[in-house]
Amino acid sequence: MPDQTKMLRVVIADDELLARQRIEDLLARDPSITVVASAPSGPAAVEAIRKFAPDLVFLDVQMPGMTGFEVVAAVGAEQMPVTIFVTAFDQFALKAFEVAAIDYLVKPFDDERFAQALGRARKTIELREVERLTKQLVTLLHESSAAPPKRQYLDRIPVEQRGQMRVVPVSKIDYITASGSYAGLHVGDKTFAVRERMQTLEEKLDPAIFFRLHRSAIARLDRIDALLRASGGDYAVRLKDGTELPLSRTRREELERVMGKE
Image (cartoon, rainbow, N blue to C red):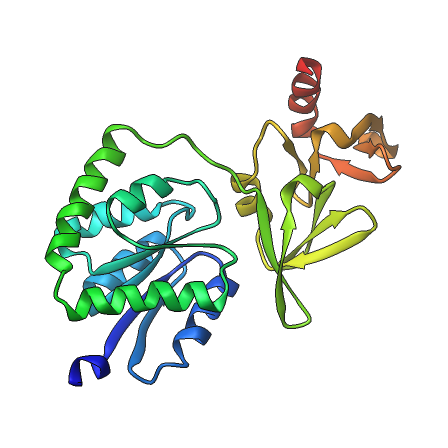
């Protein structure tokens, strides 16, 4: 059956390197699939889709600077290939995805769920149902522009440990520190390393729960015990477990204001 061996050209768009690599690794198992571009941002995704006109796109919903919906708007829904949305949020517009009959993957997804989404996308392409999906995508885009969904924040963070993916619940994180190109998620007496910028993490965490103390530290507000005046006129905070973290002078007044509301 020749349709089953149709070559599929794929673009992967996700700001997380590990997420892109995982999708690439899963797709590499199928010799009939070629990844023509791996885009680390929304603008790069738009450029890749326009340049390569792929059959299928794995598109992250929440990317800094440009969301998945904004990528669709920039390319034009009529020009979008079959799209599988990828999201870290369990309830981020899932009803909209279901109504539009466009599949989605919730991070971290397992191999079976990925294969299911890929199989559905391939069937759609082979049955030439792209036009029908395009119309639904146009409707979805219109609805999302008219009534943008309430912003959602991370409730879990996937990390790689000893070659395996595991999940760290955000509700368990006490504080986060920067270490080169990695961030350390501190949960009790354990630390999990994730390759992510502090700025990106700050944008994805609920500001009512977490506070950026310093370029190298983010803390959970309810873990903060006291503000300290360190030597040399610097500032710090002490957490309830005794941990001390640096506090930027420019953030001190904002932290006092936020904590004063509690």
